[in-house]
Length: 136
Image (cartoon, rainbow, N blue to C red; front, side):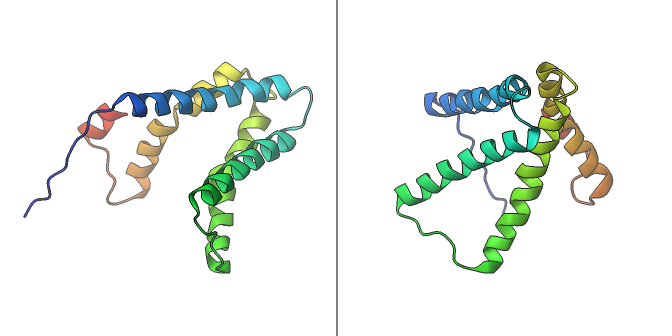
């Protein structure tokens, strides 16, 4: 039996969240450039990741959720945090010491395109299709 996919239209809340995400994400490139003269890239990344960690911890505590206690889970968080946040943000901040913030944001925007191409080459189940190419 085929599973039905329910498609929902984006409402005002979703558009507002998308706009807020866009402003926060885009502003980081601007602030990297402004603060570049004042602070080294690693300090900028520590501030960015540290503020995000504080905000996320506040959300977890505000919801009444408990933090994980398993060292295995924390090791996974550490690895994911390094590869998904610390290393990329450090490279972006360091790269912006030599290029404009506008060019950095454009290069960062190529991530979906490059991801589809890399997935096509290195995976067996994520091959490029017309639908994926059109979506990207």
